[in-house]
Image 1: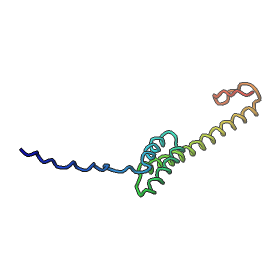
Image 2 (image 1 turned 90 degrees about the horizontal axis):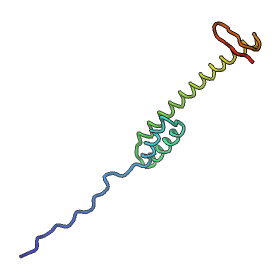
Image 3 (image 1 turned 90 degrees about the vertical axis):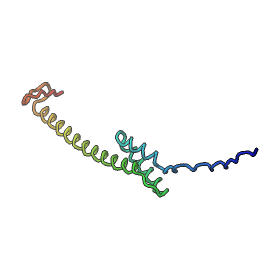
Image 4 (image 1 turned 30 degrees about the horizontal axis):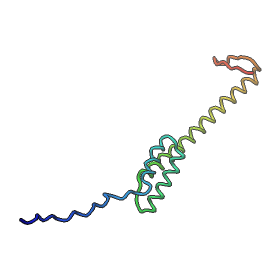
Length: 115
């Protein structure tokens, strides 16, 4: 009786896809862009540079850069508006206190306490 013929083992499979440099960092930057804008912007730029050097695109990094940039600009605008508003209120309080002197004063239904 003859031995059954066995075919040789197939060669090992190559990896399905090579990882894109900066992709993981881009995902991290995207997640952080909702919480820590400046750090996410920096990480997003680093991830995009890494991906571009490898000749790959990185949508996560681009999204992180866009979201972080818009959030930073909105934050600056809100800070300016709050600063102007607080400054106006403080200025009004100083005017009231200069006019009426120290103590508690009710002007137009609002109670002001001046020291």
